[in-house]
Structures are given as structure tokens and as C-alpha cells.
Image (tube, rainbow, N blue to C red):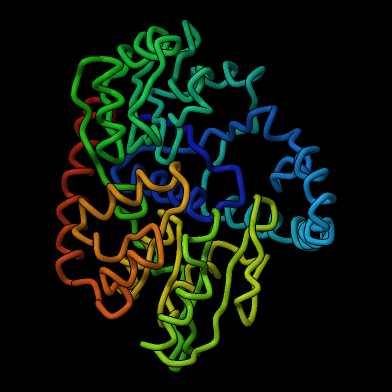
Length: 381
């Protein structure tokens, strides 16, 4: 049986990142391959301290003192220190239980296990974002250490732009790929600019895999509004959005999910904030919500999979491209906004997505995506 290695962003406590890795590995197993996630954790990530992960720099500290906001920094650090070990232990436990992992490797030891695989798949997630472009491993640029088949699955470049400085190196790496697929239109344009060839757009792995076996059935689940916000506040304020949601769905409690090992903003508008959920609890919170408010790509995808009314927003360029692309490809533009005023203009909270149509789109995407994987791995079994 052919062995397939997967290189992706599986190692942080980001729920979407972990679940897409699980989904791709299990999908490859369902196709008849022996698949495992290469437990590659870059040295600079492993060495990152609490200040950097929370987005706290010396400048941030100085500015907070000048603005009398130092108490906010201390509060954030206290939350991180209180919950970081617990959430990390929970996510690690889930990862070890639900995935097959190689031995842990970094830049210095990755080459020692590459020959164990007949093919290596890079993706999904933002493996080709600008911060990764000078690093060879996410472009599978291993020199003579690996001579198997190189494939990308649903890789995301975040932006279609590529600098002249990066172009030649990335082109050389991508020209050595057997098959290239990406997650969205801007990543397709990125590949076109670099190689001159056309990449296929495929679905995020979480669309391909059914996680229902992990979830409990609740006969009478509590009704609540769920917020899962990873980035900055929406233009016009979160409170205005919550007020609009409550005007339609009733004065339900507002629950917020945060990841304390990542930079986060406080959810002072929420009745309760969860800092230490494991991936299954995260899925269940989404599944049982009356309404979901998020700036997360995977938060949006799972809201759609669970048929949950939602509002997705973007306030940062890095989040805008994938959410706008998702909105366009699934026809959910009315539910993707960048401000409270746009939310009002579109009447986003008063509308509901056509979930039956979206299910049909997911099924079509699943068929074409599986077809890509089967063709890319053809002859290896």
C-alpha cells in the first residue's frame, strides 16, 4: 500500500487548522492509501514565547502604558497563562487520537523521513501565504532528499501577488509538482503568475469528510448566539451586530470562543467566553448554536455544513480574500460583510442561506475534489 505524507498547518491550537488536517488524512485513507501527517513543527514556532503569540511587542507595551491600557495587556496574559496549557493538552489529545502522525521533525530533521513516502501532499490551509514563501518545505522543495510524487491539495496563497524576488524559487519548486490544486481563485491566479499553468480549484478537506461520528446528540440543546472571532473588530462594532441578531432571534445569551494561545481580542459583549474547548466541543458549539457570528473561514464552512444562520465578516485583508471567494463560489455574498452598514444594506441577519442549494454545491465539489485526488495518486496503490 502506498504511503502518503501530508504537510500542513496541523500543529497550532487553531480548530480549523486541526480539523482540515484530520479531514485530508482520513479522506486519503478512505481512498485506500496509508496516509499520515508529517509532524513538522518549524523551530521558530516551537520557540515562540507568550508575548509574540499574543501579538504583544515592546511597542505594544509602551503604547499601552501611554494610553493607560496596561491593565488590558495584563488581563490578556493572565487568561493565556491560565488556559494555554489546558487547551494545548486537549488539542494534542484530539490530534493524537484522530490522526496518524509521523515522528516530530523540524527543518533540521525533516529530510530524515521523506523517503518513507511515495507521495507528499501539501495543504490545505494557507501553506503558501506570504510569510511562508521564503521557506522551501511548504513548496516541497527538498532537493534530492525526496524523489516521490509532489501534490498540493487546496493550498491557499492568501493573495495572488508574488514578488520578483520570490518568483524564480517558487516557480522551480512548483514546476516539480505532479499535480497542483488550490482552495480559491486568488490562489489559482498565484499559480498562474508563477508557473503559467492552470491549477484546479478544489474544496477544503472539511467539505469532504463527515465529522458527525464525533458529535453527541442533544434532544433539547440550549439556544444561544455563538461568536467565534479570530481577528479585529468589525467596522461599526460587535455590539451593533449582536443587537441586530438579538432583534431577530430574541434576547438569547451570547457565547464567545477564543484561542488563548493566539492573539485575541476580548469579548466583553459576551455573557460567557470559552478559552479551552477541544475541537469536538468547538464543533458541538457551532452545531447547537441558534446563530453564528464569525470572521473565520472554517467557522463559516461548518456553519454551512450544520445549516446554521450566520454572519461572516472581514476586517483584515488576510481574511477578506478567502471569505469573499467563499461567498462568491457558494452564492452566499449576502452573509459576508466588512461593516455593520453593509450588514444593514444586505439585510444579512434577516435572511437565511438556502442550505439545500449549498448542500448540492458541496456534493458537486466533493465529487470533483475526490476525482482530483484519485487522478493525482493514480498508479501508486
